[in-house]
Image (cartoon, rainbow, N blue to C red; front, top):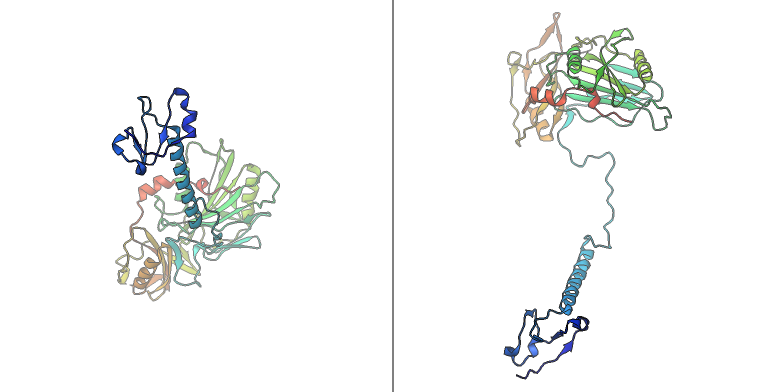
Length: 396
């Protein structure tokens, strides 16, 4: 049967002719008699059977590779225009702004800026000052604060300051000083004051840490303290704690050299603390409000308005308030809350009315804490945290 075909021999097929096979191809549209065609078909090409065997030429593989190359080239050009992985026209760089929070969740805030808050301390001229706690702490020479602490946690934990040696310091005993505070109104641990808090830490130290020195008296004030070290890491910690305004304020010193650590601790003799500060006291009074846990109970609240939230959330919202001598809410401090929660709770608390508080026959202001939302589970938090100061950032 005669076929009117345009034939062409594939160079690739000729190279494979060592087996006695040849491949020839043609356009199927030019075939006058399609019934005469034999063999497998592939996208418009029909293959002739030669010497009784089907031959799939290397030319077909070459043609498929060519088609794939053309497709990838077209895709690359499209991607280049659209700024994809093959792009040669890169988008201009967008610089992330410094000191800016791109995604902000629950945060600390206050109803006014005039009233001091625990996280409001600062380091100026080598002196750490915290107006809320009444602390003035001249630092040892060659110590700086690189970063400010994070916002307080929803369990009332503060990192007030992180202090260490500058990068230019050439000595080996760099170390750091960590100043923290635990709001005793919201602690998940079984403790009511600084003494019990340190005792809990001592009793729950991991097996890798060993107790060592006993606490010492500094500047005429007795701190409750804890000293321990890690034989594996060869690091020593010294923890000194006192209570101020119902917060356990801790000074955590870390260093590799025990002598340098001791000399740094002794520098605390220059520190000034309020008269109320003590491991088991620190309930305010004098020039600051009296702090009373759970004062916002039914017996002390005359008028109460529940907050109306615009969005359902499941985070704890710890709030400290100051009640003036007439029983009205004077100041609101949110340890951790979303903006919509802050507004809803503020609108409600401003309508609350408390019984005025008398101490020694005198009306005084009261500071107390209220937990809105879902409170943290005490046992779960205690097991998770363990309240070990060494787990905080160590620094260089």
